Length: 75
Image (cartoon, one colour):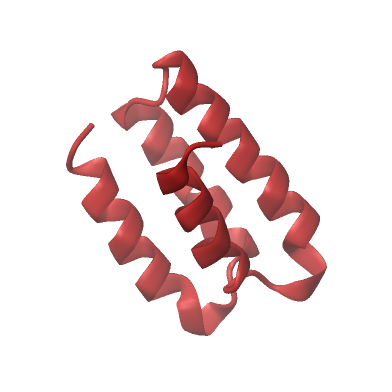
C-alpha cells in the first residue's frame, strides 16, 4: 500500500459502519490491487462506488462520494 492508498484507507475506515469494517477492508484492498495492476478504470469505479456506499455510515456517504469523484476525474 502506497502513501496515498494508506491515507484513503484511514480516511474511509473512519467512516465505515462498525459491522462492515471487514467488507470495507476487503473492498479497499481489491481497489488498491487494481490500481497497482493498472486496471482501476472509470468502468470499474462506476461499479465499485455503490459497494462503498453500502459500507459507509449514512452521514459520511456524501463526503466519501465527493473524495472518490475527485479521484475518478483523473481516471
